[in-house]
Image (cartoon, rainbow, N blue to C red; front, top):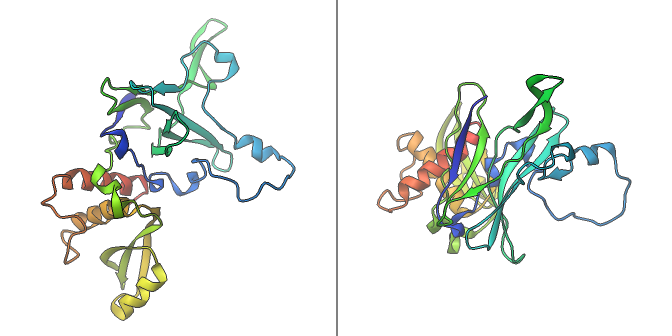
Length: 266
């Protein structure tokens, strides 16, 4: 097993992570407000899927999972949820405002769980099923967070890049945006974003055979970054850029979009 540090950079105001950074079957990890409060029987599956942040009781005394920012205004935490269907855990790094008034930010996956090794009847480093706490560490200026991440095999995960703050403000904060491909035959010949796929398909008319969803439920800023990364990959498939290369944040935006695409399997 090897470990590395992941850094999530930029100011806290820019820590607007994409839900798209989660695998599709991990999209229940970010907590949501229940649609109804109608009482029902708690099932075994409900208990299995409870989200948690702390170490198991038998590992009491280990470091906790909470990392408080230097200004004491935010706490970073790794949230974990079992996925019994896939026999695995979903994990994510979140930043929570301590005043309870601000927005909880999802920064991305925290990788595979880290399991503790114990001294079992004289056998050192005996593997166990108990997870080790992952304690987020803040940089002194409060602009970066480091966590330990387990690397599967020889493939090392890329360090996440924060979405440029310019893509979190104003119209870029609009939600419910979808990134899509325009498909002709078997080829993707166009990349676009929209808040209404049905309307956009009608606007394109017969230009494409179909529109293929790449990612949805994004902010406009997130969608623009992903769209631009697709344009860069295709070496100018679109006539116009989603983000001008003249912007000082262009490179950071493309890196963020590329990271989001890779996390979704693109």
